[in-house]
Image: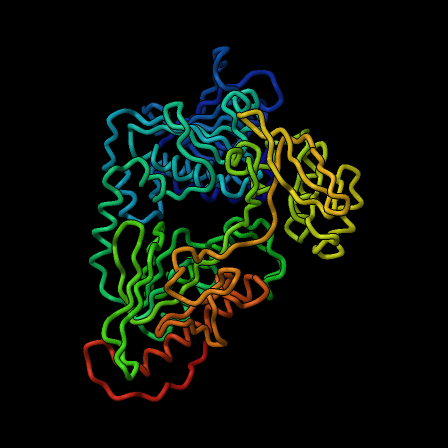
Length: 544
């Protein structure tokens, strides 16, 4: 089941188990059951602290099933399916945590889990696909909660193995989380976000804690590549730096393959995000995650341009963070079609992540909206899973790289339709069953019967909260100059949220570092509000 290299790595991890744990597998004669049994046997053989029990399950139980529990305790962590692929890490962490190895999660979150006292037990179930790179974060968060709190249990369910459940519960996007049989959430969720939903007092506590923060010299709004780069450059100048982000990593966390980041031959989004966070936290940076900005309150200035107060960023929680300068790096999100039926069937056939949700449409007919690189790459990936892929492109030419276009055209189950304007997503009230489009060349209305629609039509900047307060372009992007200055004194911007062309990770990082240097130059030339100081000359730029 495990190759020699993986066995060696796993064996090293399992040496960290402190107290005995018990594995129980429920299997039958089917091949997948035997695979899970083999995996459990290999794991148990690696440590004397691991005991294994094999059950012949009751007819109505999920099979195959692996449960993990500290010795003598009822199992609260379960894997329905074979936790390999992206979920192998989830399995390893569950083994270690059940065995008493401490989690690296920040202490405040661990304490919040332990102190959580729900009125009833919380039975979580998460439907995943093994190719989903967002699913492990949710699985690992819920597993940790189940290990630490006896009123919480969690089962990971491989949607590819339990298709009848997926159909019955109308699961068309992963991760899909249920609690006590009811829908809890869908899509990527962090541990803080999950805790916020189950802890009634969490938002109030966080708002109070944030309100007490000492003012920053540089406050960065957004935790993607631009925000992370800005934080590193600002912190290296020795100034008080903070990052407030709805989700650290931003869209990069949803990117499966990265092959054009100079000096790194190949990586993936989650790995890059982990490295970014590790780098940022090497410095004295205050990272405030799972916080969304709601309003920017610019500083007032005297007639000579001297600020009379601090810039404030108001959060959805109601808390306000103060800073002498602000760098806006809120990035962008997937652009929506904005046609009837899209929102109604979002998560019920309308999807935006082919890597995550593609396996749920195995053997079915799907469409990809968009003929750029992301759209054609999605079509190529999906072609290996589904019965047929139809690509619809609004323009009369494809915008994707020629090498991708040639690959897509070589696939027998991929059809490309140009000059197609999608007008409606259709469904039966429960899930997608097709889409309508107009052939722009003939003006004829057309209909395609489909099970799924993957939207890949570019990005829209996250600037709705800034409208009326800062200069934006016609596309809603923040207008910046070559140093990242915006129309507001002391406010800078960087990355995909700005007018800088070519939305690429490496370009966003460069812009983030430039904005941080611009903010530093602003700080050394501008007196602190409420004080009188001589104007200083900018210090020589130190090596980055």
